[in-house]
Length: 298
Ligand SMILES: [Zn+2]
Ligand SMILES: [Zn+2]
Image (cartoon, rainbow, N blue to C red):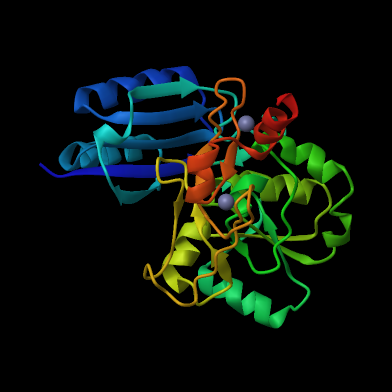
């Protein structure tokens, strides 16, 4: 029996998120799928895994309501998820701006212009003043980002509005700005928030870093690893020994190049994920802050 994982999102008005939540839960239970799904008045965002035929049936049924939804199929299955979680929330991505986001049957209203990976390169060639703007958390950008990208100082997506309102990025308001994130969903919202705040020329990458990396590997404008939200914590484009791959991350203890994040061993007090080389991880499995505190006590 072959199994698969489906990843998807769709922005469209949902009149009754709670009813859609119940329908999605029953649909997944009936097909023996596991994963995480969020429904909001703005649409749906999910990732589910299970038997390939069950995934196909799920995709077909879900498309009856979320018309035009696109699925990304990936390796894996039910066992990659601890359980099935289907929730109705105010937002499918937590920017803390549910009142500000507007969606209609075509998607987000007033978002950034979509660019294919090829169009990203064309724009950068034609407009030397164009800037990449990282739409992820600062931690994710530590191991990989677009060339010369501006990386905002955010721990979670919730921090973006204050960051944009701080004035730090006002110098970009008249320049072409290419926002980017892992698969594109965060920039659907972020680009609209930027436009609302006076950024005049905002773009977003269709399919995000994933699609760009699949197209250009390490031979384009992307550098380093891609942070991912599963056990692996990072993934790379191109062959494992690609000479064009650059290691951007550094061990917080000794500075050696690394792209491996670890959870700080001082759980649950500290929930930090930090970069470490294997040797330092063996010696002290603590984040930079907790390691410092430990020394002070001694
Ligand atoms: Zn180290
Ligand atoms: Zn820690």
